[in-house]
Length: 495
Image (cartoon, rainbow, N blue to C red; front, side, top):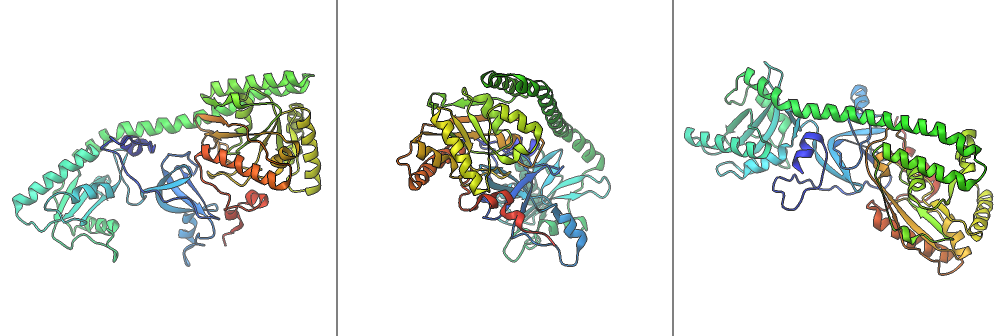
């Protein structure tokens, strides 16, 4: 939808009947070994369908400019390389919206040159593919002017004036405002690359050097119009940014206050079945006070005993499942969480099972311990990816849950979590607004008790989660849990 994108940077899907919709070509998913992200002006990663600066890292990234350390420093933001593009991500796929240096900001709204150029090219008398739209700085006022440079073979004064009027009309229809200057030039004026691409920056330089002529509007009129047009969009952006910071602060304040009450209560209550309802109620209160709507589908698919397997997208996943599920399963967590006394005591009182991910002998003993719980009729919950990452996508599943399920002939219930990654990404502590969906799938039963049966069970469960997740499959990108923990792009070091 045009309005939300140009004014607020929100890439909301448009209906098929929307004649004003903006169209951008999808660039697909990142190549194996690469990571991408979209960030705001403060270099904070944005959620999906929010436009920002596109950055990436991986083996294809340059090491910098040759003998130009200043430009190299400007190019990199930590390990991330700034592409100079504006983009948004939807379902893990990258959509480029334009080059930052070519985007025209007018009255607080982003104007995409290629779209206006395509519309002007349809005007009879204008040479197709020979239009350049760019922003030029007014030397007197310092404001940015919207300039249209179009080629035409017509040289009659009356015809040229008619073409200017038509260009003004289509610009108003498309953008809601006319251009500051329209230059109708003879063929060969618009500069292009050898492949035929419009060189907007070079055209802008020609214009600012005075080598293109056109009528000039009064400076005071430009200033007044730009000031009035920019008040509302700039105000909205300021309010949105302020609201984001206030929301993040409010969320952490609430979590801290609730933790001060819940932690001692969980530690002191003598019976585990009393602790879980208290935690569930506190987390639901946290979701309510932060405006986080949690939608749960498929509660009827839960059965006991069973093994629950969920995807892992965010630090919030455990909190969401504890608040959303009507049961209180034994969560399986990495042993590293038991390294701190505060978290170890709290999680142990809730029945969390700590497992060793990289020590084979300890892992075997952990599997036996989990098998005993399943035989006792307990529900056990695994995050089968074994870790999480900031990029969208489903990582390979580890075999622990499925080996236990096959050995104990126990059904596996796939659980798909959506929305938590947008609320709080890995390696980020800046929560954002957003809704969360939890989809509880039908039980998947093992067809044997050997390793091959566990592999088949894993593949069926993973397929069920991937189908509802709406994110890319990263099974071929990562081959081991250790690689997932490091990340292929992290193995590259900048000189």
